[in-house]
Image 1 (cartoon, helix red, strand yellow):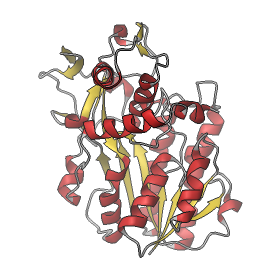
Image 2 (cartoon, one colour):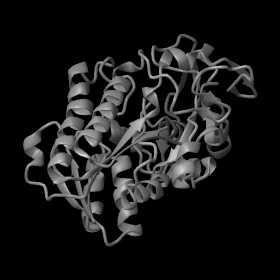
Image 3 (cartoon, one colour):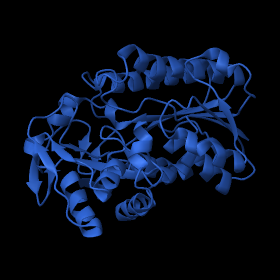
Length: 354
């Protein structure tokens, strides 16, 4: 089995590559990365030492893919993962589309030529912002919780299901990922290729180069540990907004099962996340950090931002039903792992921004 992983030197790609190397040592792993993300270079040597073939290239350029060895599966972990991409002044809207959508097209053409299966790592941000903000919430302790009278299609007590609305607006980032999903499913149907779409919640773990608009749990813990400025933004500056959390290595059993048994008749689109039981607010995370690191003042800004939502946790019961998959790493263990790395690496956030 030869598996091709894009974005292999990013947090998720490198976590998957190391996990596959340890758990499935007979697989041959080929990885591609353009190293545009600050900090990604730090993973190159370790992955090569582990036996992963690393290629410097960019999925936006078909010529960079022409000399790759044919593989049985493509795992697409390369993307600009920021919900504010295209409007934040750091990435143009055209660059975002080129990377997240045109890159997917190039990989699908590669899959067609190789007769390979495709696993697309997508995102919870394909779901409608308007409908997410319409979920009625109440305050419980230090966080928002959905009210018991919530009656919205695609919403359950376990969170947002795969049937939740994907109507615009979903952000430019969400739109590129949703379009990529549609394109991948069409390629799979048209050319009889196994294709799986895994919509991930917030992924986290030690080694992630977190930023305020992505990898929020890692960013917050690293910033808090070293007394960097932090701010609750929106929702009256309460910090009550909630997201779910999943360790990236917990993706491994699901991906391995999809690769090993790409059976027909199962859903092609799945939510893959920590769910309600592994969700927390920024205020709760700050309280945990205070116990670990001591008190730290956090500023507050009442005004919100266009793509922020008060509560978002994914219902992943479909993955459990069809693949017997569930998260393995408890939320606090993820936080402890990140905190331990933060204590040893005071300049970690700076490495991610250089």
